[in-house]
Length: 383
Image (cartoon, rainbow, N blue to C red; front, side, top):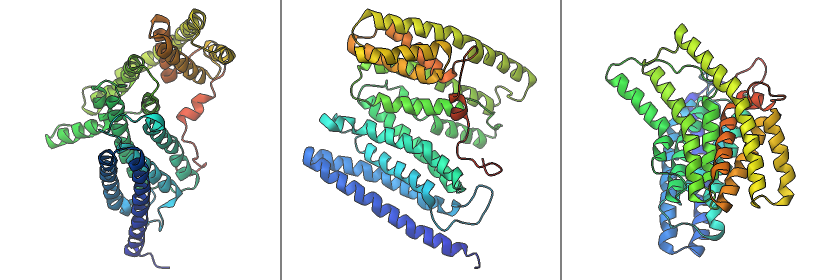
């Protein structure tokens, strides 16, 4: 059969219509549900914001359909594929979440809706790339949709968390960090200033993943504002450092290819990633015991699990998972009894270990492979 790009593009545009109809149908049903529990004005405002978000996504999809081909090829796939379908599902969840912007604080079961929508979007995001690689259907379209939907989703989620008082207003700058970064590069090029390529990073993708995970948890309606705001500072530091280092590199302030930079980077990695985690692991275990001993915030049935997490962190056995458990222990204790030195310190140590890992003298770290590898890539195929 002769390759006919225009025919394939026309077929993809027909599929675009089906996607738009599915979006409209789901938004319509959701509006009807909200209309029954909200005032007509609030439900209509929700629908308008959801439709506006949908319009943005549909314009991006329509424009990007011509890139529905492999990264290194030019022949269009005739269908959007499963992975892109998953990404579009993420987009639909973002539309449903966007409707809650500027609306009154949801009550009852609806109070959990924004958090559940964003958490579901994040879970699908973890798997859509895996499916694309495993089925050999990676496309430039998928990359475009993934980047644009990620940026839009995190911006809306941050806006909601600020609206609910769980993130400080300045966090919106971090929510727009990618857009501001791209704008800065564009302005430098317009002004004729040099722009370098991004240097390699072991933690860029990991930091971004932890950031979106934190934002989805920050949307939970059960936290005390002081706990969420304190955690926001802890998560903001690595993200700001990552973007700051990248900006200094692309704007030529530092030369990421120079031997001096590589020497400094190696020394910093040895200190931060290899040596300091052991000290932080010991401190985290001590603060966790302190939290357990000083009150009744942890129910008796959960104590064995917390003790297991303490051992996991202390001995570096799947240490990041243990750190995640201890972070929740600290957050729940602070929510029930108020933020104090022990819970604040435990939360800080746990978030540090989540980002950095268990470091030297850790017994078993299988999570490192899964956090850094591109899962689903076939041997000898695209990565």
